[in-house]
Length: 109
Image (cartoon, rainbow, N blue to C red; front, side, top):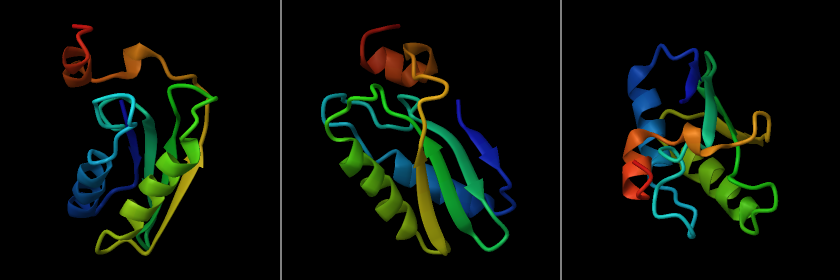
């Protein structure tokens, strides 16, 4: 599912992951983490955070607001110096990227 790059601070990693689980696409009743939209989480030595994520569709009408919510909520976590979000569509999102929990919630498992 998600690839974590450099994480000596497991507590910070957990805080970020838990925060990502509070963010939802209004059209999907499952959070963006479980739906598989978070591809990578980079935490550097100074606790600057970079999140590489995707969306279910390149034409998502609320893309900007979701990206901004990810950046803002991550930046507010105690211990995070700076938060950056990069949007990618490579690889394209597929339903296979969803966690089992998300598939059950949406009736796909």
